[in-house]
Image (cartoon, rainbow, N blue to C red):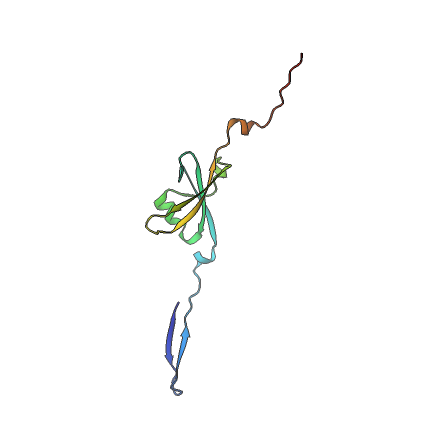
Length: 115
């Protein structure tokens, strides 16, 4: 958390002391996955990972929810898109997922004809 000069009593010399803070509980908690339907691409679910200590910001102000796109039925990968977070100004990568089509849900079938 910076540096500070300290004059040692009696010795009279000045030394430089490096300052550190303990990590907060939030910093120790790691990352969480958040998602939002129709964001950043209409019809898709956008999913990203963010530090647990700040996940409440996109949840409160951006409409994101904690969890994965797969948990709400969006299981087919549809690429990635960079997203610039308003106010924060940083760009994050959002993984995109779409819902499987009826054909994908049904699986393969074999069709045959008897003459």
